[in-house]
Length: 174
Image 1: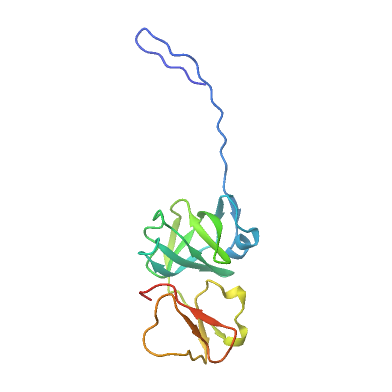
Image 2: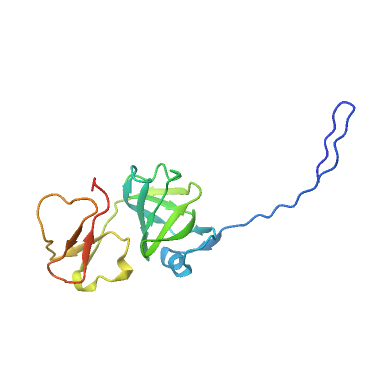
């Protein structure tokens, strides 16, 4: 309840009810993905590492923890300091939304900055790559790709070693 007093005046008493929603804590990217897209606000408590940062296109970046990787769509530029690659965050308050057959994180407030460490890719063989690697930084052993020269943005490249795995580029500057 609130009431205000002036020199010789008094306001009417007012009352209001507030509902405060606390973020649901999730321990990892894998746990977040298992919950699916919703309007729920989450606190991703694992330490996540920036593996790609593209400040020009909706301020998108990729992050990963020990359990998975994820696109971060940041049109409001909340993670203005997401780069450089290797920056680590803790307590990322976010929503999870569906995008392109997968999910993306939309940050809602600036997380705690933990450290900067190298973003080291996991080294994998082509035959071991499956959906669990979506969004993760990986190095593929013994791989050749059709074509030569620089990669083009928004283009698909076939792996010569596998007919069912395709590298899709998204950004023009990488």
